[in-house]
Amino acid sequence: MNVRTGKRIHPRLPDLRHHYMFGPIVGGLLVLCRKGTHVVQLLNPVTGQLTNLPLVTALLPSYKARSIDFRARRVWLRSGSGVADDSTVALLCNSGHTLVVAKPGDDDWTRLSTDDDCILLALPLAGRLYCVTNKNILVVETAANQKARLSVVAGVNLASQYPLARLCVPSI
Picture 1 (cartoon, rainbow, N blue to C red):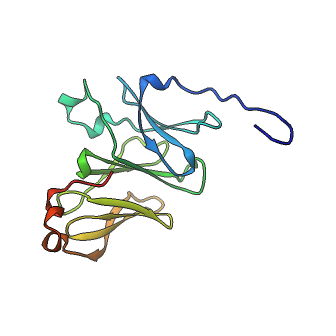
Picture 2 (picture 1 turned 90 degrees about the vertical axis):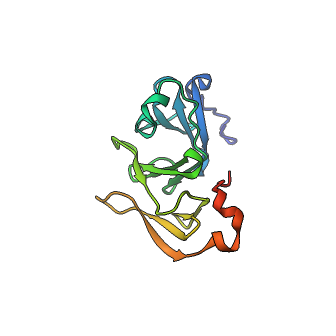
């Protein structure tokens, strides 16, 4: 509602009962996955704008694609505000074993792999996404006309200092 004019907006929102919500991200956007079709979309709940992302079925083994309660543990958006063509969405799935990224309009998710078992923690900082594994601190590198990739920022050995880190239970 515009306080000065009293004008209200009435965005048209999808029926959220038919979606999984992967989580809120920077700027108040929501990442939704439609049950049954696994279509992933970014939703701006203020304006009602929907932006399509690739299907998540490519991330799932075929036997799980039919009946799946697929949940992403964390979601990040790399962009200024709102949804722009250069926005990058990252999903951390499968208990930290799968990190995927995509931009609106991409055909597929780009799977980023580590040499370690899984990502224990992933945090956005200064417009970049940093990931912590048992052996390394990594950053998601995105450049124009190139696929995203993980680059090692620093080597660490968490397993020797923190034996529970070997269990690979990522933070929520």
